[in-house]
Image 1 (cartoon, one colour):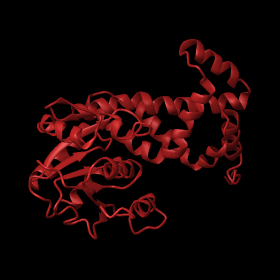
Image 2 (tube, one colour):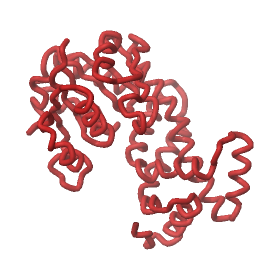
Image 3 (cartoon, one colour):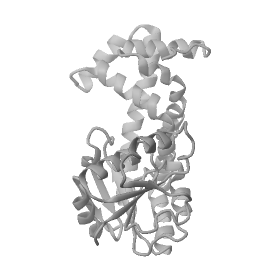
Image 4 (cartoon, one colour):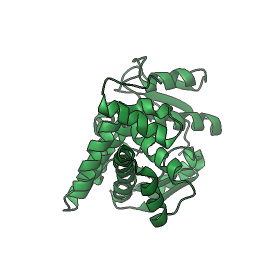
Length: 302
């Protein structure tokens, strides 16, 4: 299939990166739909304004029929909106159009998405990004799964996805991989945040970090810890939504998702302290957060 027009469902961080890269490395036209495009305060609106100078990008007016004329739609919304967003664009969805879902959701949610897309005449592929989208962008490792995964792999590679591979024809395999990985990745962020905030309060953070370095050697543990905490401050709301899907995945395996559910709470809590992102050092970040924790009316005004 010759891909001439690509639809983007969602223009948040991931969607905006995909749009920019596709415009740069391919001649395709891009049609965007995001229900927040008319909200000037939303990232989607800001991202679209930054891209709109390119004549090959346009926006749909409504969800229904948003992707008429597209041969491929890439979905990159938030985990809690993945199914609702997909359902909203299924009226008049082009027959035979690929629908590749990049969202961090459970295998059960991917299967529900597949039903909606295939029932509308589309071709569903589940995708799982196994790294932060930055700095690798379209070169990030992406696993594909489902009955149509192998057929889509060369299509994605031809568009410039540098590390995209079909791993299974079984639905849910890519999603399960992503979800189980997230128990560790998002869990580490939550654990490091909680550990070092308490350690800084007691004045023992340097000893704690030295001990961590003995167990898990890194060139610069303070810098790594600051990075992990910054991810929760900047993206905690989105990560909490993903961790709810992780908890669902673990539960569906017959395992109580105690750790994943606790991670939801810490990730959801973190963005209230995003002002601390302005602090360049780990100690500064911890101190800014602790000041606000102890006196919620205080912010760093950064």
